[in-house]
Structure formats: structure tokens, C-alpha cells
Image (tube, rainbow, N blue to C red; front, side, top):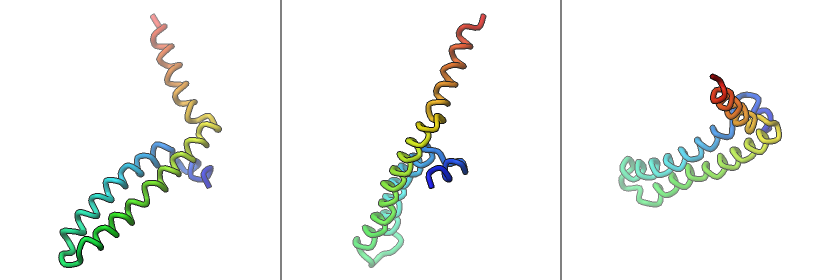
Length: 94
């Protein structure tokens, strides 16, 4: 499954970014539920916040799995290596 996700273009950075965004979205849905649904109480807002908040650990785990796959495949360090090589070549050019 991780290989398929990687093959379609999903990278660890994407999953990590989505995880951090879901934390902010969790706070946003909690606050929005408090204001948009008056009379339903704090319990309903808490449930919305918790529901969205549970996405973050899943996305962080997905990012970690993709990161391990990228390291084994060489694409994670390959990009860093290529950038470093390019900088070295530019520095040594007259």
C-alpha cells in the first residue's frame, strides 16, 4: 500500500503537512461547532474536535511509513544528495 501511495506521488512531506493541518482543523471545527450549533452544548463540539483530531496520528504514521520507504528506495536521501552535489558543483565552478 505504501509503495502504491508513493508511486502515485504522495510523499512523506505531504502526509506530515496534512497531519499538522488536521490539528489546526480540529481546533477550528471545535470552535465552529460551539458557535454554529447553539444549544447543543460543549459535548457536541468536543466530539467534533476529537473526531477530526484523530486524523493527525494516522497521518503522522502514514508520513513515517512513507519516509521509511523513501529511505529504503533512496528517493529521500537521493534528493538531498543531488542538492548537495549541485551546490558543490556551483561552488567549484569558476
